[in-house]
Image (cartoon, rainbow, N blue to C red; front, side, top):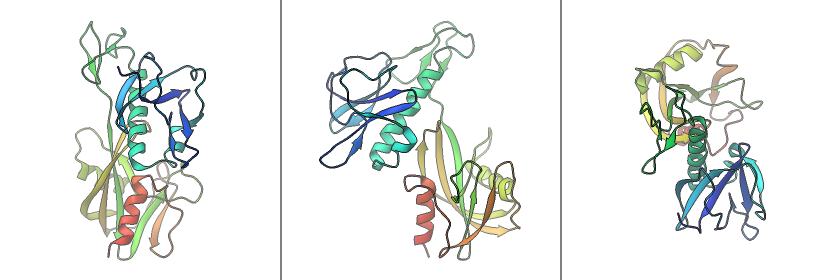
Amino acid sequence: MSTLAYWLLRSENQLLTTINESDGEVFPCGHAVDFGTPQSALLVGAWRGLPCYAAEVESIPEGVVGELMPVRSLFNLVDAETVLLVGRAAHLLDWKRNHRHCGRCGLPTIMKDSEFVMSCEVCNLLVYPRISPAVMVLIRRDDELLLARSHRFKPGMFSALAGFVEAGETLEQCAVREVREEVGIEIANLRYFKSQPWPFPDSLMLAFFADYKGGTIRIDPTEIEDAGWFSRSALPILPDPVSIARQLIEAALKST
């Protein structure tokens, strides 16, 4: 392991962050340092030509200056490249912490050196990082967009519909089912936009555009608090720019 590296240190589910006073740039441990070899360190990528490691620590090492910040809050302060790096670190740290014991026989697992896999040396169970695909759908009807809000959103915020893919289901089937279940309408002309890893805790968001086909909005109150058709000139509060939901909505607004 290289001693000079960038580090993402997490303590009590928060990342240590530093701010570069010259340009205001935010990055966890924003300078290359030598922390030796903390237990459970994971190589999560590279940053500015140096390796970047992530580690779970009980407390911040003595002499290290910075502020602990929730990962989700950090996402609003950094660029897209850093979001991916930080998200990957959080995802892998969660995976390693959650699979310290075998889910089949209960004995301790070890992480292989060659790849990200937790291995049980007794019953040979292999556990790779979990990735949970979720489909997001933005529906258009003439000049209006269908937006909804869940009980978990901040006040006044609306977003595109979304839901997790079920076992044995295609992405297209998931999109149709989730829209039908959550707001009771039918869609057509499903079109892929792009994807985004979202480590809360382990999602992969796959975003689509769709056209309204028929039906009247009937919300599922267990999933949706409110939903409606919004014109481009009268949109509600939207998700943060870092999210694929916001990017999906802005792409729709730019299209004819």
